[in-house]
Image (spheres, rainbow, N blue to C red):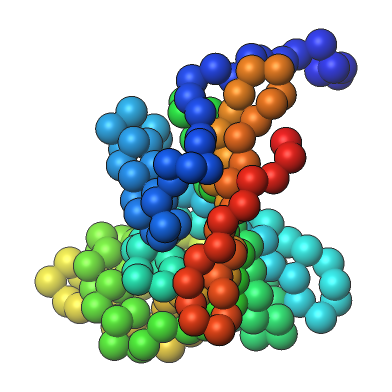
Length: 215
């Protein structure tokens, strides 16, 4: 399959370095709200890249569940492949891509578990069957003989924890926060003359330095 002749001209917007806010969080909030208003499907979905001591990068889609004052939060199984990578190398990068807006945002920074009580509070907000499903994926990414084994485990857990019974929060499940060190905003432009503005956190005073990158 040859896609070398397939291309689009991006002409929906622009990004001017002189008019961006001092804080990247203000711009990130604005772009996220634009994506929501344009009815982008799951605009909070992001590609998460991690790399353990084996030096082999891994990437997968996860869902951002919160924007904090310092970063972003997502939830997962701590014993998953991504959890193992994070334990070995607490640095990560995520990518949001909103095709409808011809925009992408790259975020990189350090990553750490959030408070267990906060994880538990979020877990109890999830739909009941999603809570049950979290217990099925143990260990997440582990090999399973077939789907029937998964289904049987799920049905047994549903019987153990009916709708009127609280599903306990697994100790192996919870949230991570990526504290942002650098965030790049990309706006597609015609003729591949894309706008790229990157914010870098100054470690001395936590202020943000902006610069334009070549496309």
